[in-house]
Length: 354
Image (cartoon, rainbow, N blue to C red; front, side, top):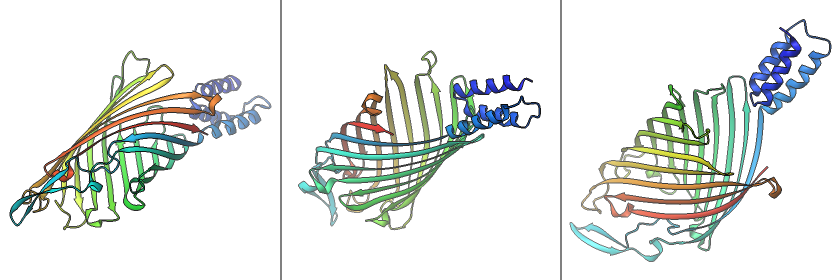
């Protein structure tokens, strides 16, 4: 019942990071008529400072160097077998369409703004990165933006995300997409959260619009904090069904359906953080891909992707710089040889946060 004591308690909550709870107590205090002289002005002053703490803005700039043994994501086969006039014909893949490896450099700039309210959290982020190599035809520029609207409680239950992505490759607009994704924590079991997920994405190909389509997915995921790890080790898994609806009925293979599983692990090591992610997906076409390949065989494709990342803060004495090492390998198998591809990427970068 003591207003001064309650105000001290609100300040303690703020220092512990529970800013929204501190603001709620401060607003309740301002409605009381028994406050000691001068406390009302002090509460209003602190509320202004606490509310400013609920808004966070940031900017990061990064430079990277790396090596990619398949800069152009080319097929791994040097020869392709086509069916011409009912007979198999083996053709050599021209050198410019074979896998090309090389070193590259990357420049990236990313920004974000986050605001927390009493029951919701809003965040907007976006960034642009350019990947440059000695071969100008393999240079790429990517852009993306995300808006997230989420539950703002101590134990958030729902999350809605909308995003836009764009890819320019070889100085040509190649791909763009718009995505809407949602998840909801349906149950908590021990240190794990069980959540259904759903997503809808429109995929647009600028050069070959016939490839465009709408992809939907529904799945179930679990996110766990490993017991006994002092909350510095986490594991997550999500599995779901996919369906890709062709925008144009002339798209080769027409609609596609399949499934995907995504597993991720993260743990603190010393001052740094290591993370590992594995993704496996399967997609099958609705009808035969093309009579040029095995007399119109239906295309099936499976993709395995493994990513390792290590994040290490270099400290404020270096301008809030962070060192990031990244190693990635992917392999795609397919019934159509044109879509059999693989690649390995190693990259190291330094990011400055502002």
